[in-house]
Length: 228
Image 1 (cartoon, rainbow, N blue to C red):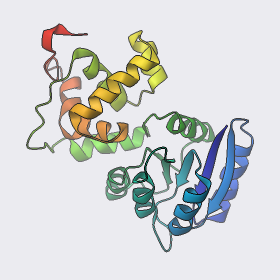
Image 2 (cartoon, one colour; image 1 turned 60 degrees about the vertical axis):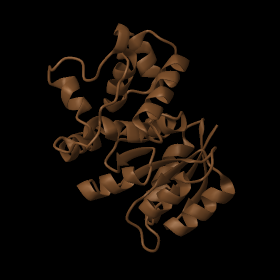
Image 3 (tube, rainbow, N blue to C red; image 1 turned 135 degrees about the vertical axis):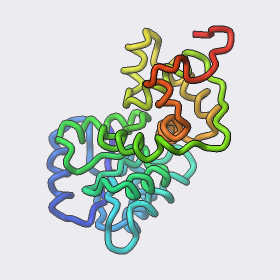
Image 4 (cartoon, rainbow, N blue to C red; image 1 turned 90 degrees about the vertical axis):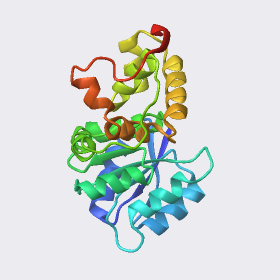
């Protein structure tokens, strides 16, 4: 059973989410909060598997609350940001705060339920709209040093993560086990110097990796020894 905490200042939104999730046998709403401060307090006391977090709320906002929750020692709740706002600064701030996933409230019920399950499984989740924004936001930005050497398998996994693939989907597409995918992801995070999958996806766009991956320029990064 995946436990869920809802944090949103709109009571109607919380009610709709609660009713939606109540119909799912593997999801259980264990608490609700109308602002970020109460949300953090409940997350600390209830330790849900997933916090569904709004961004713009009176009092403490969702970005600040997310930043505190993700700073806790593991195991910590995963945070899925769910907001009506898809402005560039909102997307960037939420991801920078460490959110594990980002969906817009115009997502379908099926997308929301699948999103909660995806985040609960430890996979990053960025809606297609957010992925497009990341590409636009960072297509022309390049860090001073992005000379990272990835094996062929690691590059494939990173491309798949950036395209929105889950562990299970990547494993099936690459004909490897889910555990092997997780091992590649662990190595990727260490090499890229990032804390989680979402940050790895941001790195893939910000560094130009995805430009190279889709631009027909050959292998984005060296593949030492032809390792695949």
